[in-house]
Image (cartoon, rainbow, N blue to C red; front, side, top):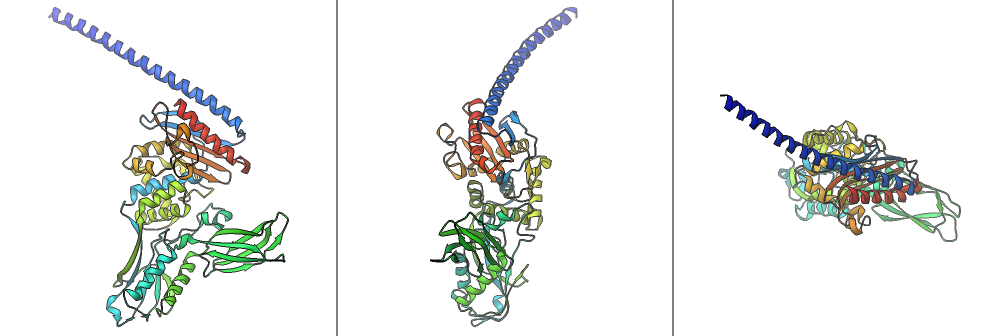
Length: 486
């Protein structure tokens, strides 16, 4: 018994010694790793501080965070918990939520509905419904072709009832926090159930010969838009003042300054009215007699789908949104998320649904994320760099991670960074850009020289207009620092 206890004690002592040595080895390795990380982070910090001064950004609000996508370990960070305007970096939240919530096979469809029992001869003795789903890529030509089929395919030449346009989005066209300037031009065109030709019209303001008066030349999608122009030509630096009211009356005032002509790409203020007038034109052009045209919210039972056209699948829209920062697509997809998750196709429903999806699917505390829209045009949007890298890391390791990664612009290859970060960074950075008045952001992933995939967020706020170029150069150089040191 004594011998047995002695053997047990010796064995226990020997095992403890081995374990202690093993522990000490692991501890030394851990300390070495921490030391290396600290050294690299210190070097990165020193270089980034130099870059801030080099590019004249000392008065700019800066927030940076990085994270290892495998371990989730936070690496270099500066001001990472500071709420910042994300600009178009906001799109990554909307698109990831879409990848979780909207099936890959989803398409935007536009349909013609009526009761076939009410067709006698070539006359529809009842109402006809055209249902729109907000297809942001729907063109006037496609809609014209669909309406033409009412006559050529269904052989209907007269509708004794009314024609109704049915939409599935609701709420204000313009999200809270958008500036008047942003919502005036095509890049800020409103998302609507009734989108045609991107809800955008193109006109040219030109000087009249031998006169200081000007004329407007319509170039694209200008039917059913009334133009009232009082602009004068001047050699001085004077502004052109442009506005459109809810009746789609375009007012051009002020001056055409120092140029014989100038082109404007303008958002259509009331897409529903524009589409209603366009449908009326198409019916008349095709010789289909009808009564009034109105807008409604639902199709009564018994009016079944007779004709339809569909868009490409949702993936192509997500790809376009991320690679080319398409605001109209982003807002349309946000409304669609709201419709699918909440039963309401609106900005408010969409932003609430996105936050719920990020919490449910990625286990993210979204208190550091404030969303007023899906595109990032709102100056009220806020997010921290730390939340951004947490989001990016968890997304990368999720079921939709690789798909999301493939949709992001690739450095020197595609999208909004096709001309940035080439050479040794060619194809090694997949990231979303963001630009807004006073804001420049970049967030995504970089595969480093040490073959580590790092999620990163670089956000600059309170920029002067003259800082914009240097802000982008700074971001590219910072990513290069990450590439070499993390």
